Length: 101
Length: 363
Image (cartoon, rainbow over all chains, first blue to last red; front, side):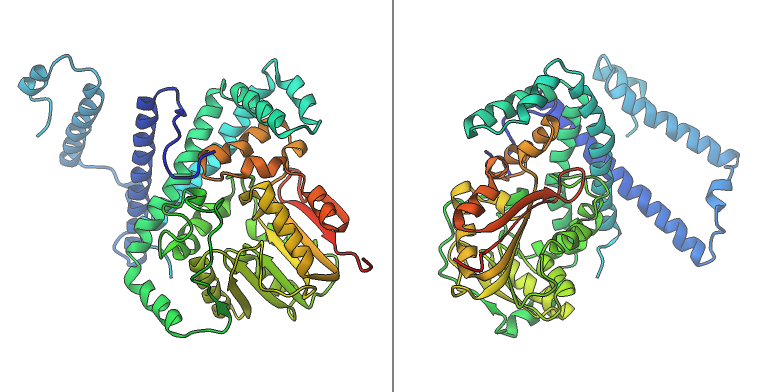
């Protein structure tokens, strides 16, 4: 029987590393939701106060300047995240400048 | 008072995670279990009651079979995650409210009430000592804001959605309590006692159904009793609270005509459960009724469901869950002297499981 908050000795997902990864992933999910909830709340408050019209954000199409910024930032984010699991050496990442500061 | 956006959203995330895990993943895990070659023979075995040691061996086999399923392993992982994180996130959320909460508690403490009798010299039973029940860090009195954590965070955003322990997804736990209170056989009672009340939740519902009854709640936890008094006063329930051991209460012999025991027996070893039932028999007057509500015994549920219940003992700091689900409560009640003892489920999932009996009029 377990009486305290100490973690059980047996893992849930076959290894302790996998358990830890899954915990990190779950916490990231929580952070993602908290942020999404906040954005939705902000949109609602801005709509209620007349700054935005309802579905203004949904109907918005970025202009050329914002599109360029969004594309570059999105490509950098994907490269950082996916690339973090696939790089062969740190040198290649730093020298190529693909790793954003 | 409500939690701020971060607190609310964090707790609501946990509620959604628990619902998904306890519905989609648990359903898949149940189907995976049913496909295992041992499923049929285990189902037959579970229909026969047996010794404590044999039950433990059965539960070990059921767990081994269940854990072959990836869905089960993830379901149990998320169940544990949520069980930990409800305290972590709720603590952070109510700490941000401390400046608003402390004056409320200070005001309550500065107004001594004859409805609360604390006993600072009460000996905590050995079986209770050192247990961080339900993974509450430091145990039931380990944080001064456990009450607001539960009332503002855990209950409205996580537990209200079900999917934990014996509570099924979408079960309304307040309605379940109402249904349990309806299991009292008489239309009115003069005096009702609740051992291990943990606060005012159950007795508050007794107040709805029995508006004229005197209500008394006993518990080991001073913090829970203070929170209970606070809620009772705010809601006008007029409940009296005593800090006492349910095995030795201050009530005289034959002094109450109703006893409600809600979600307490799964936190007692069998020896203590027997003592509590005997003590409640003592304080009940002839013709008085005792109603017990708790998770179902293993003999009343399919093997897969038994694995879910047994998990609580190893993973949610419920050290006596397995023992209590093996204990034969009707037998303990009959041995204490109760008559008209019966046990049954209030819904198809087996929970709440009610055991009730009456102290005979003639003895």
